[in-house]
Length: 310
Image (tube, rainbow, N blue to C red):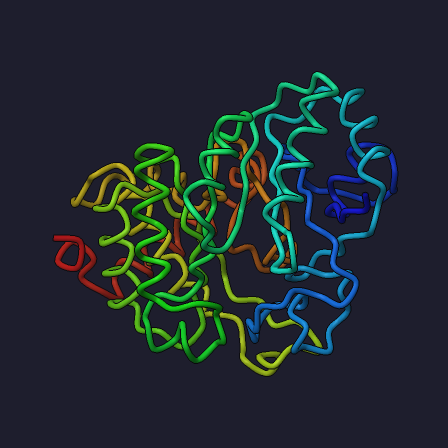
């Protein structure tokens, strides 16, 4: 079986050589589909409606590799803390994910496994859980039903909401991580309100900054302004802790670390070294400390965040 793996994963495993300012702490695997994913997401290079290279997800290359070769290298590498398997919509993708999980476990790899996927039947979720998956990622991506429809997400907003509720019921609170992309044309207030709803449902949230990729329908849409992204990072950080008051700025620096499943740091998935949205390590965060404290202070002056969080 062929799969894709992020270039950072392959470098950490010694299969490819690239310079890395931060090493990935998760093994990132993507299902392979020669003609791309059957979903019509306008921002995603994997979508079959986009002319982008299928080697990419966001700004990161994901080369094709044999699953057996990948697993053999994972067994030798002890620096990872998690495996993330990302799905694409294609015939039989649910069953193939289960085959990947079973193959990993057959080789005595005991790392916790996350699956990122679109709505599936509850029986599929139970099968994943029974075979060692402890977190589910759900790519809602859009913060409003209008933007959800506009960017070409599969199924419907209501279908996703029902699936989210079912996933929380099966995996437990804070074990379902909703992927949200900021910068698709939403208002900050609407974005924060959707995060509040999702946390009330018992979810966790992984924040992404919109990243235009050449060959996609949204290539000409710019990335979000950094201070606006800082606002939603602060909001997510506080909501995840059930806090409503703004703490000390120094403490808020932690809000800028990559959010998602435990052990997920996604180095430079949306970022370049000169424009960091999510920080993959505390070391890089500390390096930019003075600049980031200034950004956080300015971001908090732009909006009454405590009022929005009530």
